Length: 383
Image (tube, rainbow, N blue to C red; front, top):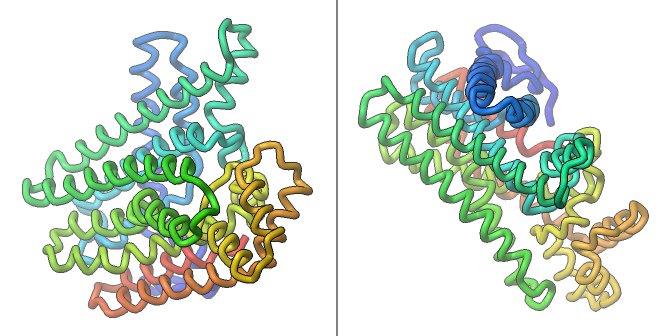
């Protein structure tokens, strides 16, 4: 990613600080902190045993890049929104609602993937399983942890709805309805995307590489690409009263950018630095994620008659007991097929389409430039 400063209102701002521009991160974090305070009061009124739930929600909200909130804010700015207004405060609340929905998705996703860690710390279901043992509770610790994490996701989902509804409470009805439509569609698509992911993981693996990749692309679009980029951008535009044709244009650039974003995550899931990703190297391999990268590697191995590599990929992907050395062997096998280069090319193609469409829009400055840099920040990660 480029580290050249970006001139915004006469100031040089490093690309890594894009989310801090116009106090977007601070504003969103303030809304989230307010929610945690209210949540603690509400839970304490129910039971003194419920405080740990608020702790876990706060811990999940304390991480994250806030990219979704930033995409929403700067799309709103690009379509005429002005900071310092009542509408600006509402957009920040919508950004916080996106972060709360992200927290809900992560609590549930970690359970479905059987993930051990999240952002360098034990995943919620693992932490609550450990708490079960620490307190000497009866019954199965794993079941206790899984149940707790599901309920944590539900709490975050309820909060997301509360914060979003409050953000639109004073908005004109047509604007509120349009934004609500985007938000509701996003939540439905992510839920369906999660199911499609579970379904894809249950399909025969390695029998039909083309079908494997098509399923992987379908999961990317439904579960991540639209939710991570397209819908936040569309929400921002809707909150600025953009018309239907403009919303369609936003969607047309948001989807390929979101796909490129998720493909980058998939590469980092195998080859990324744990200090950056917050997960052990190769964790996606142990979890058996049937990504475009994995399906391309299997297809290329078959095409060149490398049956040993094809069989290694088919049988080892999703093997939880893989040692670090075995993970390294599997990652090297993927790299040897040339699949990494193919996925990098696909990332470049998708990003190029999105960038061309973005720069073709006559959006207001400095928002247009910031969105270009945010797009780079989302896709140009290498470690």
